[in-house]
Image 1 (cartoon, protein in one colour):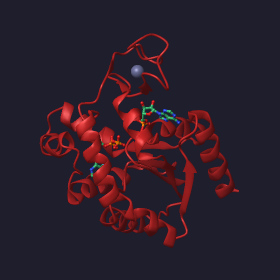
Image 2 (cartoon, helix red, strand yellow; image 1 turned 180 degrees about the vertical axis):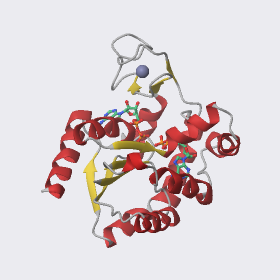
Image 3 (tube, protein in one colour; image 1 turned 60 degrees about the horizontal axis):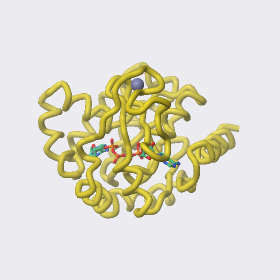
Image 4 (cartoon, helix red, strand yellow; image 1 turned 90 degrees about the vertical axis):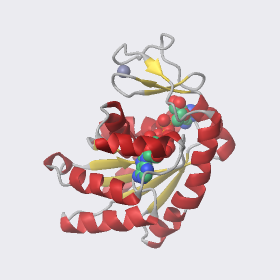
Length: 217
Ligand code: ADP
Ligand code: ADP
Ligand code: ZN
């Protein structure tokens, strides 16, 4: 199974991906996580990507496409994959199609987690992430049991440097211009399915799970 999880920044892609991958035994591939890993390790990719990420812009298509081409060709992908945060432009979607064709794979479903811009600002500025395992929390909507400590691994929680009001606003604008056209792109291919992401985390998950089970059966 190959699932694309779409949605604006802060919609809950990462949060849902954690649950969906567990339930359906899929590999979670997040371009944001890959890029943040490269930034942390100060690789050439990380140094290039940081500049874009810090100002809320997208990393150039060519860079992301090359990363994903390599990643999707690895043998651990055969069991099934959930793509989180990729594709984010029509050009990336077209490239993905070509990569998958070469690998004899197809997209089974594209799920868009739909949330209004007002809600997204609150979600992103209150987001906290575990430094060790990457689990995502929210100070109000999904707090850890102990303040600033990860429930899963006791790691320290931190705020992403791009989750500030100004950068969030820029990211939402970039989403509207560069990523929104993908909805129509996948509608035309009959792969698109929207879920209402403005509800509690468990309810959103149930919706996604139901859709994926129907698709499989
Ligand atoms: P994305 O990966 O789409 O950017 P995240 O999964 O990181 O989004 O979620 C953004 C923030 O919103 C996090 O702090 C997360 O805990 C919180 N969140 C996710 N889903 C919900 C929801 N259904 N209701 C309220 N808050 C949510
Ligand atoms: P969110 O879901 O909260 O927007 P991500 O963790 O998915 O955040 O992405 C963080 C940043 O990484 C983006 O703002 C962008 O700079 C970069 N990025 C992630 N995925 C892509 C992609 N597919 N194409 C271009 N840039 C990307
Ligand atoms: Zn953790």
